[in-house]
Each structure stands twice: as structure tokens, then as C-alpha cells.
Image 1 (spheres, helix red, strand yellow):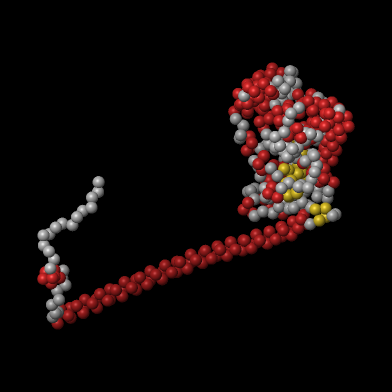
Image 2 (image 1 turned 90 degrees about the vertical axis):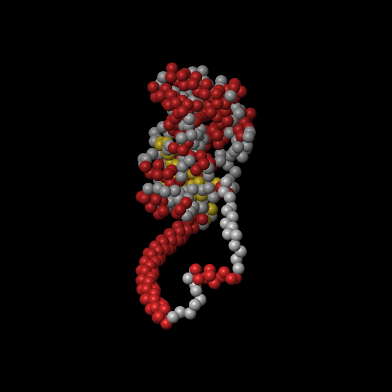
Length: 431
């Protein structure tokens, strides 16, 4: 342990009589100097002054060099600042030009309110390839001058802030359509907003959250695979691994969904086997994230509307009332939506196998969602895909057994007792 040291005791008390003696020992004697000593001191003083002058001159030279170096550095910094300032001015000018272009979207056309165009700071736009980024700056997706026009739907003011800078914001707060996003598609088809567009679509305000993808990446995927009639994705890849079809999965999320779907398919004349057969993962689509050609929209939208119209006319009143009831959203996860939007979002694969079978579709992969799959889900999906590709009923049964074991372990016995039988058809069929 460190201790504080005390000063040594000399045993001698200080006194004024000893002071001159102490001063003499220190070389500070107060005796007058001789003439010779004075002359010597003056000579030493002159030499010392010369040395000091030399040192001062040397120091001044060093200070001068440092000043020049500092000035050079400052000039470089000023030059960089000046360039940066010019760059900022250029960016400001570009923003101003962009704002002028966006004023077309924020104005009125034919008495209707146009969708807002999003223009965010360049630092917030996800990085893309130079060619794509240059193209997006000139004609962002959603611009009325772009051949690719993508709108992003929002319902609340705070959702507006989540709109991707590469899309055009579309306020749907006043819409009362039971069909939700589908109603927006129908409105856009009749509007001037998509006139002369080669591809167009409207995505949810939750696009980034559900896909894990930026708008720039979405556009890049579309431009990298030209020639398709429709581009889509599936934000829930686990469904591809665990269910025969999205229709059977709906039974676990919406009460009586499968029975209602069967009734609709029967009265409309759609193939019932689509509900229960094994579907490969590349056909699953569980959201209305669609960007497509005018040809696709002109065929798909009337087809879906016809399905709903025929169902409304031919379904028994009790079943029709169920279709439009809020029982579909008992937990109010979708603002009390009816069964209609959940039926519509599952009709896309059916359309592509029936009325739209001549059209080409491209499924955009979602790397962020894929990374969320555990090893069992990856194996289950691969097993089902191989069974479908080889039309192996035996492998299909193996997949069902593995799947049932997985769901029981993950969701528990109560869930399995309630749903496993309902989502497991007696026979293995392939779509």
C-alpha cells in the first residue's frame, strides 16, 4: 500500500542568521562585482544575445514554412469545400427540376386528384447500379413519363412517410372499396395515370416491411428480366413449405375459409382440384404485389371481377353474407376486412393456369425473407417441389408426414388437433 512520505527531520531550526550563507552556496552572493568581472559579463551577454538572435531567426524561418504549409492545406480544403458547394448547388437544381416535374402529379387532371410523386434526398435512396440510378433520376418508377409506373398505396398520413422514394405515393384514404388493393387496380386501369405505360402496378405501403426489399431493387429485378407479362412475389415463403396450397393455408387464418372457397369455385366453375392439389413454390402468391403489362391487367381485372359477380349472384344468401362478413378478420388485424380481399389475393395463380395460361410470369425472389427460413422449412419446401416435379405420390406422402410432425412440434397439440385434419387432403394430387 502506498504511503505518503514525510520530509526528513534535520534537527536544525531555520533562522535569519543562516540566510546569507545559504545564498552564497547557491551562487547568489551579494558582493559588488569587480571591473574585470563586469566586462566579462557584458561580453557574455553580447554572445548570448547573438545566439538568441540566431535562434529567433531560425524559429521565424520554421514558422514561415509552417504558415505556407498551413495556407496550402487551407487552400486545398477551400477548393474541396467549393467543389462540394457546387455539387450541393447542382443537387439543389436537380431537386428543383424534380419538384417541377412532380407538380404535374400533385396537380389535377380531368378534375381528379393525381397521386403524389415522391422525391427524397439522394442520401436516402438505396444504392443501385449506375445505369439504373441514372434512369431512375430521369424517370422514376411512378412518373407519368416513365414506361414503368409503380404506385404505392397508403391510407394514413404517417404511412405516407414510409413510401419508397422510387415509387409514386397514392392516397387511398377515402376509398370504401371492400376489395382494398384490387379496387385501386381497377381505378388505375380507367385513369390517365397508366396511359402509354408498358408496365404498371400498385403496391402496399408495407412493401419494404413485407418484402425486405427497396424500391430500387424491385425495379432492378423487373428490368433484369424483360419480356414477362407480370412480375410478382410471395412475402411468406414458409407457406410454400407447409401447405399444399394457399387456399388450405387460409383455413388456419380465417374461420370457414376453405368451405367458402369450395362454394365459390363450384358456382363460378373454377377447377376444384386447385384448392387441394400440391402447388410448387414458384406459383405461390399471397399478396397483391403485382406489376404487369396492360395486356395482363386488361384480362386479369375483369376476370376477377366476374368471379366475384357470379359468386354474389349464385351463392346461397347465407354463404354470400358470410363472404362479405367481418368474420374473416376476427382479430381485427386488417381493419375488419371481409373475406373478399383474401379470396382475391389467392386468385392470381388460378388465373395464370386458366384464362391467363398463355401469359408469362416472373416471380421475384426475396432474399431477406428466404434467410428467415430454418433448415426444416427449406427441406420441406424442396421435398414438396421435387414431389411435384417428379409427380411422386410417395414423396408427397413423406412430405405430409414430415410437415405434420413439424407443425405439431411448433404449434402444439391443440393447434394440430384443430387444423391438421382440415388442411390435409386424403389424396396426393398435383396442380
